[in-house]
Length: 512
Image 1: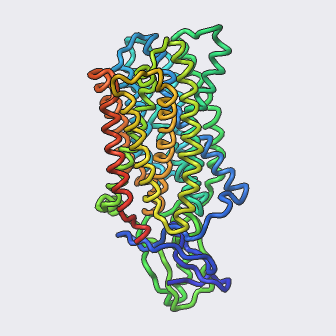
Image 2: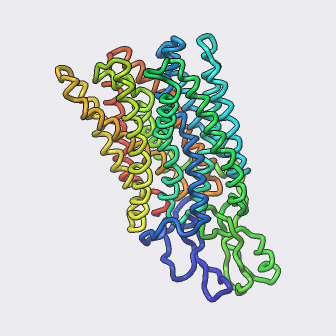
Image 3: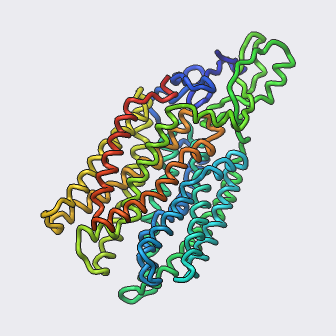
């Protein structure tokens, strides 16, 4: 099926729902329930960013994501808050859980993004992040619930803004979807390193020697100011960059161009263009012949959009995403207690170790688990390997990492001799976290209608949101009962292994 472009070539179904010009290799046929369009183009990606507009879109999205990921750095603030306000472990973990719940529960934010676009969502995120951190900084022991709900407010705004810039990145750099998502998502991956550096600068300027535990208030106010200074200008920039018409969600159907009036009306129809979004540009159809056919979009009802819930592949992604992020959350939320399990340090020595571990975790999260794996997966997809198979190897490898962490807790092993090994294992989980956060949104873009990207990613992240609430509670329970994290490490090692095996054998719609 093709349509003439009026310039001597014809348009075909192509990458991520795109219509490609003759001379470019055709992508793989998508066997999804709703439409027939293709997956990744089978050619090795060239230079991912080719012009200044693409660079501006990706770099702005990266800066926004950098602020959106600040809730992930809770471990750098929670300890001081607990010491200053004399809160229990359960209260601190509950605050952390609600903040991360807001960050990953993006169903309503994603649905809103599909209708209003990226700039309003980033503007909302700017207001909620700035206001939420300021409110938190004035909380006290008797008002810890205020801190909890303010942090959840920060999480909801950050999660919505992050979802929107991921979709915008796919829209802007659709030829290399893995690289696009990973580069924008790299901002969230680097957020822990970003916050670590900000806090070190603040502490060196505000404290002589060791900082008092009340420094957490200044930490949060600094995050509020930085978030406003980055996200407010980014909202304006994204408004001007996102000038293209919002895609219309719907089913692709063939339409015969059998008369002159149909050809004239086709100027108002939405076509799948060369981008990840289904209909950002209008195609010139003045050269079409009467017997040519055209792919057009028919509007979907909300119920029809939810038809993805009837596909087994979506539920495989749903469970695997929750497991993948959940395992990494053990390290993110419980890093201080994990480190204390292996190494008996004074609070001063602990801080001297936690900051470097957090910084390195964030760096490998971004550059290895995010950008490098995103680019490599694009190359592998171009050479015929499904992205799910590449992801399955990550799950299997990190199941071994969690087994190794559990193994270091076996009795009669001197903790001091394992200090370097444990540090490397904790840091390596950053690779897993970066891969999970960036690859699953890419899979959504490859296998489902990108006009509904926010809705579908929001649905997928319901499981992740549940994990952010349940995993800290489970790890705290294990630690309080046994004095270590041996149980949860073994549990997630097994879950990672199962997910890796299932992902290796599952067949995504884009390869059908």
